[in-house]
Amino acid sequence: MDRNINMIAKNFFSLLLFFFCFGPHLAYAAPDIYVTRGLDFGTVAMMTGVQHIVLDATGSGVPVCVPSGRCSIQGGAPGVIQFHDFGAVTITLSFPAEVPLYSGQNTRQGTIYRMNTYSHSTASVVGPIQEALVGGQLNFSPDVVGLSLWGSAIITIIIN
Image (cartoon, rainbow, N blue to C red):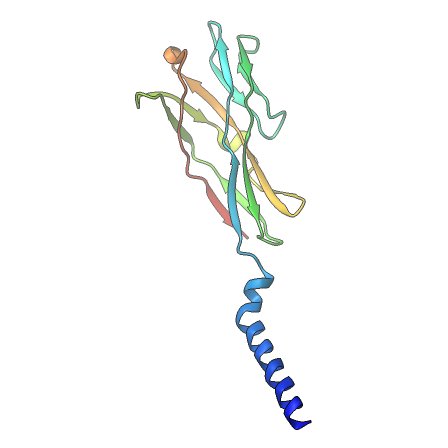
């Protein structure tokens, strides 16, 4: 009988030691940040007089020409940044004043402005995650017809 009690105590102690060493890591996942969709202004067919395109992620989330009616836009959607396993915290985002855009020839052909205006500056709770939508104002040179533009931005994330 003493032998069974010693064996049970030994197994219990081993299980307890395992839990204290590895349990906290099993119970909580490490927080992760994902860019699940990049900011996309869509494919634009321009007429003369287009000044810029606005994609307001805080509003409709649909890209529009300014002045309105001066272009046709197919597709386009706000960027999406998701925050997984951060818990009950406030996540604030700060965007750069401008993001330069380049064509395939590595030539600057446009700029995204006003990301702070047209993006969510605080992530919203969406089910088990938090999410922020990203928009902006696209200004471009007149000779971008037929080109794809690309760029990257550094977004500051503050967690409180």
